[in-house]
Image 1 (tube, rainbow, N blue to C red):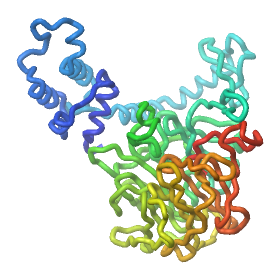
Image 2 (image 1 turned 180 degrees about the vertical axis):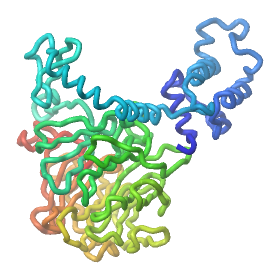
Image 3 (image 1 turned 90 degrees about the vertical axis):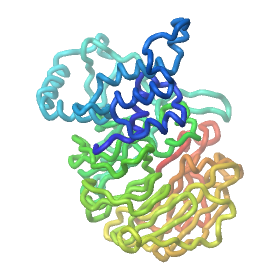
Image 4 (image 1 turned 60 degrees about the vertical axis):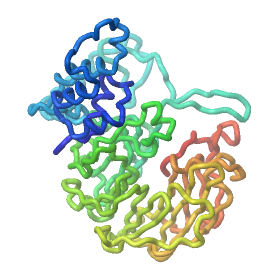
Length: 490
């Protein structure tokens, strides 16, 4: 990385002894741009007026010293001095860890895999019947054996309030363009997993990558090329439950695999500002795996060389960006309240606002787009848009454009397809946090949406009427229709 943003410095602080310390805004301002520990501590000494002494203040007992903000900074400096780049600047430990993992794999990967194979053949767990690995083997290293949990969740509640409590959030999914048995799924606070047998078994292909998957896509023209935007997308803002409980990792950029997830390389930085960069959507050209557009909270970025260089083509908080199928010149995008398009490949200065009729009765706080994908060679003029607010009763409508995104007309705004009931009679909406829409590849009039539950168009009617496809709680209907909310991708 060319430089380390101040947000990355605070990330380093948060991952050390200062994990629970609050940095006052004035101090944060003074620290901005400082990269060396000596420079940072000079600011700290001046701010707290402790430059004259680095030990206890007279009369201060041990507990008082331990609770003093300045004391924590002294501890941090001791920690940070042992984690520097060769030039004395603060290191981004996530980047360093990933680089180290890649280096180890390059040098010793073959030997390690051979050793692992030997362990598989020669070492058995203490209790050989305790569990089976995804590949059908039954082994462990060092005599360890699994004692649980042994299933994907546990049933809680009673009556109509029955839920299945899972183990983690999995809210991104991507598909190989030609092999229906190969899929990828990603966790916003975990890794990337691959199946090659249609979901019967999964393997971790994201080992060594920074934590979190905000966006995940496979190139339509080459199933071996995968892009992942690291970090957490939907939850990475301070109004979400997930973020407030510190399980929403910051992004460390975009990573790319050209061999189906076996190895990964980090793309060059698209943003070097002071804030965390949040990825919302990533789209890849149908014909050119190097042509990628990304929607982020800082704007839309464009690359035509596979991530070696990026151009900011639109500023602002963008939730979605999509190519028109098999037409790299036409690109659609959405913010919280507007829809835009470019008919010149998304280049700077080529974006225009779309007309929305009628205007949504409830001002939206997020718009997601749906275009037809992977129906080989089919260029569709259809674009769907789902509008959601962020409060009670704020489903703003399902819209459709049939003229390449120039104008959108409302198809329906009832029932509430973003709520929790099977008939859409409730007023629950949290679409700013979880929202999605997709179009059937072989039928541009068939649309499916994601919110608290999944809904689908009632036949090939372009979304003028919708019926529920999943239920909010297992106890509210047929058990096979239960999918735990919230649904972020469809």
